[in-house]
Length: 340
Image 1 (cartoon, rainbow, N blue to C red):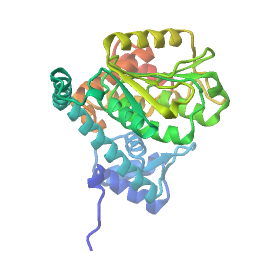
Image 2: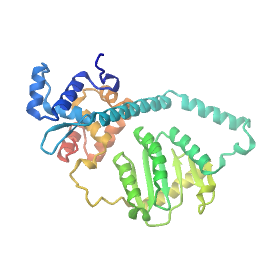
Image 3: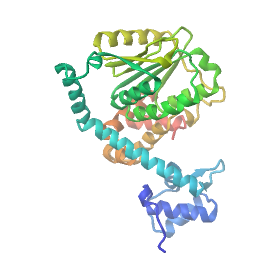
């Protein structure tokens, strides 16, 4: 039977050959990589490039001693599958947004409001959504259509694991699209390890999280065009009020901004090293690596599985965070901080 390969999971045959060699050997260093490249007549490729490719694919890890060690086959394949699924999802979501289908569907929605063809109870720009299942369905829809900004608050501060599991899918979706996310957590979050872990996870993906010591109103605002507030703030399970009224949404945005400006930045973890790569998100590291390896934005975007527009937005964000005036300077500063 012919040997199966990993090309369908986005792995180049040369990289797969190295991974299989790693599995047979159990690991090797720069010298072994150099000999392998020479034997395979792969000119112009440095061992560090091989290290970077295999580790970025999740096929290997670099040990403290500088050796390249293989990731177990099951874990490696699982990671490759997730990578391809994430890439396909990002491409489909980007296409859904840029193709015009979103505007087309929203036009139908607006038309039905204008001609009064919808049932009386949902013609209003303010709707009552009863029950948590219905509220989550509305949140799913709102986040799918969110293009530029997501503002949320958590008045209790503490997030249950169930809430996090549901939110992670939605949050990852919009952050991957380059949406600007700001989240406010009440101060009890500081004493809850699960909540703080997720808050820091969000920041590594590009979100901005702050802690408030003042009372918070529960809000979800998307693109400053739609907002959700609870029907009963003391019993949120009863449901929510969805408003698209421009005046009401603007007032809620103003309320969020006041709460945001009185809040404090998320504290740095006690065991965090200010010079470690942990302060760069996975996407930021991939963007920085692409600046060093890809000659065109189109090539880099294709390799990362995102649209060119989204790629350039991430580049601008990384440059701003590093305080760099150009891409070359961004690469240098990133190396100084140990991000790449």
